[in-house]
Length: 404
Ligand SMILES: [Zn+2]
Image 1: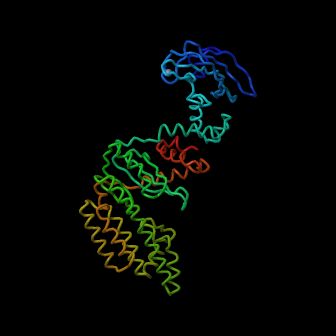
Image 2: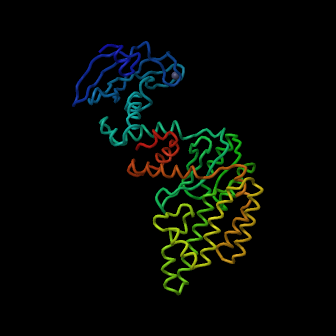
Image 3: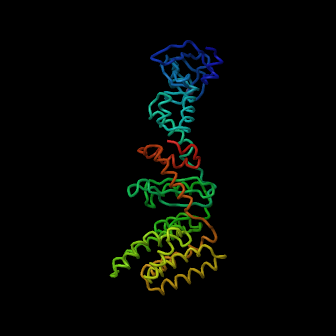
């Protein structure tokens, strides 16, 4: 094999090709390095003495489906500058790895278009080998996202396994990148993020979160100059949860069988917005019937439907008036859940209306949540936590990230 071929096909520059051997279906290319090119792997100095050799093997690109290995007796040298004895620097592989850089690139390329399992099978290596190569790559590329230019962020928790494991995730809303993955749902999971954000000197303008006290406290403490914007979807969801609670209560209290029957059928209907009710399935009619029989439920439903207009006002000032008016009517209804909600909304008014200055939400994180579900499905579950977190950080390069 010519020197030019081993250089162009296998990326082995500066080595001499000696022989090809066949071992158990593998091709083994034997190469050597010339004495005059020896240098210290630490300082790069060429002033070195030979101190023997260490025979090593490196997996490299296959020829067709046949595995290929490089056999190289790595020279050991004593460096005059460092005063240490070590192996010479190898240009075609990193550190103590058992495969070449070219092999790693090829494995990554394969992992991009198929699953880890299929890539491992094709290359005749273990699943772990592919995973390790991928993990090192992801770590190098994504583990420390740059935060300097981050302006608007969203923080939310996502369920990895329903009810079992949660992660706290931070997204840069301008680039769509996930910039932090915290290991739990508690706000203290964010501690490393605040530290890195501070070190980056980022000028964060606005943060979208839900109305939980822990987030409010953390954002106020660590980003005192940023506007806190309460996510509108979380507010609607909170209302829906309360509405479900109310319907359950009314059902329990109802003595009339007809009332009970009608209430039973409205479980999903009351969570829908009026315009989303399916007319072909008579959903509007059924809901109206239920609401006409139950004044309390009707008041709550119509107030919920109306609350959405809070984010459709022409100005922030109008929105403020709308909210006050809405809360007054909720209070006036005397219905417990509405009074509670009105109190909550009044108490969080600044952050709710801040949406008019910074129209952001945690909505884009919802999309990430769905991608993570796909990730898990393709990758047969993630037992390796670090790997999983790296995959989430790489999600914005979704063509890459969505393969196992
Ligand atoms: Zn040296």
